[in-house]
Image 1 (tube, helix red, strand yellow):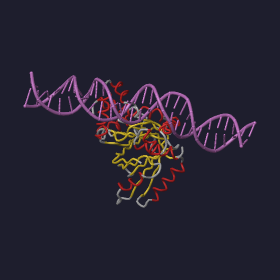
Image 2 (cartoon, helix red, strand yellow; image 1 turned 90 degrees about the vertical axis):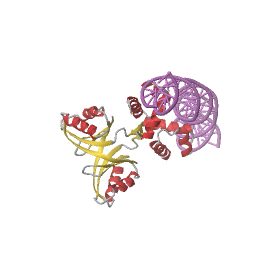
Image 3 (cartoon, chains in turn purple, green, brown, cyan; image 1 turned 180 degrees about the vertical axis):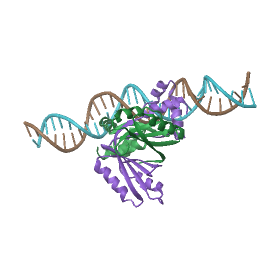
Image 4 (cartoon, chains in turn orange, red, yellow, brown; image 1 turned 90 degrees about the horizontal axis):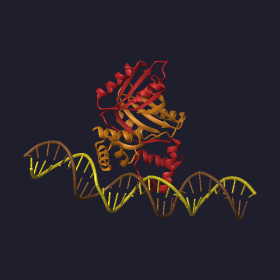
Length: 137
Length: 137
DNA sequence: TTACCGATTACGAATTTCGTAACTCGGCTT
DNA sequence: AAGCCGAGTTACGAAATTCGTAATCGGTAA
């Protein structure tokens, strides 16, 4: 993970479709080197995946979930990751245990998710934040 | 946004490098159709960007920030987005105003960010959660 | 110096993307 | 009913990118 790697990652974060040839030109090396390094970064797990960020709905939100103490948060979050409109499930430290990041069509869809979470036996409480604006680092 | 669009998005979310030809085969249409639709989805803003999810450090965290009432959260979050290791800056509803999602090398780096936020005149308080596990929806 | 190893570069082949023109199929007008 | 329009789809050759692989380079240890 040297400076060259970091520059490549920065470019890919901004646009993951940037051709290796173009990245190479920008960072001053050859296509093959970029290809090798990206491949290595994927193997090492530094690049977790090539993906798209979407806004299918008009509404993003975080749902912070507290589960009962005797519950396996791991399996709960695994199940929640399969729920519709859920982008990420984080197990977190702090007052709450799990954070869902969701991208939904409207407030109704968000509310459905909250309801679904609250209906879950292991879930003790939820706290929802609407994401009013997103800025990429 | 019909079923075909959604299937294309699902495939791209899983691997944004999937060739149009392969997507076409999977969803049962032609390369050109996939190309047209992806192009349209980008124009419509449904696809915000092609990107990579990384784990450059060993530590992800959320830093929840409360700012003073008379402050322009917009410009504050804009500045924070430029800070090193910051992946997203969200303006959110709820008790806190801004949430930083960070990907740092270690706890020291996270602490630096927290310190930096707290030193900010407009910042009243911060609350940090470590992201112990991430699952993609 | 020589040998060696990983990283980089070079280059032709395979694959994908891209530009564009033709085609299909509802719906609409006359 | 015939004709037409337009959005979406398909077809296909050209350009660009990716890929496989072999040669080269640079630093290091013996």
